[in-house]
Each structure stands twice: as C-alpha cells, then as structure tokens.
Image 1: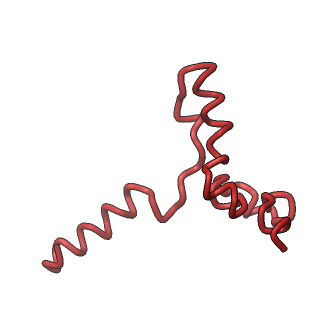
Image 2: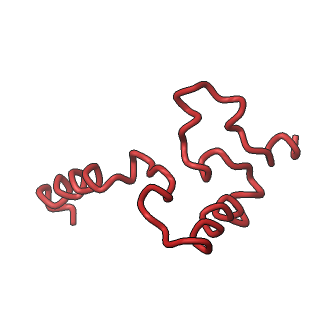
Length: 79
C-alpha cells in the first residue's frame, strides 16, 4: 500500500484529469518533500522561467474566482 501511495497517479487517470498539476497527482512522500518541484527548478536553473513553464493553476486558486469570493464577503461585512 505504501508503494502504491508513493507513486504518481497520472498514468492511471482518465484523459480530463491528466492535465492536473503535479502536486495534485504526486504521492504522499513526494508531497511531503516537495519533489514535484524538481522539474521546475531544473528548468529555472537552465533558463529564465516564463508563464508557459509554470504548472497549470488549480481553478479554486484563480484570481477571478478569489476576487469574486472576496467581494461577496466584503459586501456582506464579513471582512
């Protein structure tokens, strides 16, 4: 079970889910030591990073979505 949990799951997922960022699909050990960042660090070491080099952002963290949630909370006086 430990071996199965420590491997990346991209190869066994359906097509729409294969584009998820590596931190979402990496195993428990990789998440705990941030080894999913190794490829990004290697690219950044060899050239200047651009937006195309970065991983796809989770929809829950997109600025437009967070701004809308913040605006609703601000309007309701929660913040």
